[in-house]
Amino acid sequence: MGCTTPFGGLCKMKTIGVLTSGGDAPGMNAAVRAVVRSAISLGMNVIGIRHGYNGLINGDITPMDIRSVSEIIHRGGTALYTARCPEFKTEEGIQKAVDNCKKFGIEGIVVIGGDGSFRGARDLSIRGIPCVGVPGTIDNDIASTEYTIGFDTAMNTAMEMVDRLRDTTQSHERCSVVEVMGRHAGHLALQVGVAVGSIAIMVPEIPCDVSSVCKKIEATRKTGKKHFIVVVAEGYEKPVTDIAKEIEATTGVESRATILGHVQRGGNPTVRDRVMASYMGNAAVELLKNGIGNRVICYSKSEIINRDIYEALQMKKDFDVDAYRMADSISL
Ligand code: ADP
Ligand code: F6P
Image (cartoon, rainbow, N blue to C red):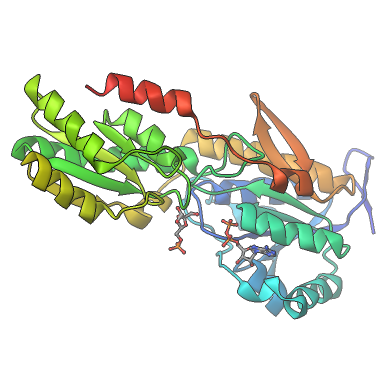
């Protein structure tokens, strides 16, 4: 256990692991790179664990050197692969993971993923493998942090896609009802809805029925508006196809439904995601260097901080109701 840093300090861990888990998010690669390079700079060894917690259970690992993370900072996806791993939630599965950590000399792990992945990190920490979570998900639905890696890229991708839809919507004087991702949350839909100048934003957090959207369409038609974009979070109660049919039947405006889907998860990360991922990956290694685990890296009030995983997982994320109201007031 432990090693000396190139600057004479002491690292409490000699070998750490890094994995990406849950849905991939643009910027995860930049985070992996930061973890690997920060740890090696400090004199630690790094082991890449492939396919999320599956890799820990099956011993699917690879030693990482400084060149192993070359040419990935600008790429979407995750070079370590990712997965959802139901077996990890079983006592048998997690015991296999702990045994493999011991077998491969992994003393601590940086887990890059969402809340589900953090629950796994908490369970490993309890069993003596200190873990630090780094928030990576396009949904920005993690309560403990104001920002998650991938959110900025996904917002920009969705905005660009809706801009394209807008051209055809405008030419045909139609209504486009567009579904964006976000799992159970409407954070992505809200930002995208504002950015594309939508007539309405439908999210699970705020009551908004289709009839009120139709009223808005009818009212704005009277002021000369001829085409309409409605942005709907995937967690909203009704499918976009039904919403589009209802709008067409009520208002007479020809309507089309579009589901943006997984395109939102891909693509080169934006500057914000690359930089955030680099800071967060580095911060995670700084904790493990000092033997500190059971923490998650968070962005709060313009700073990178860390919190206890238990406390982080208890937190509830507020929806930005003021921003929602503002969006409504300028979509006329
Ligand atoms: P995300 O990390 O993006 O929220 P998931 O919810 O799918 O994605 O979780 C990713 C993985 O984390 C799961 O496949 C599982 O291996 C692990 N995980 C999720 N929830 C738990 C839990 N309650 N306890 C332990 N591990 C969990
Ligand atoms: O959490 C990211 C996310 O893309 C959600 O927005 C979406 O609900 C889910 O993952 C889709 O998961 P999958 O890639 O397993 O279909």
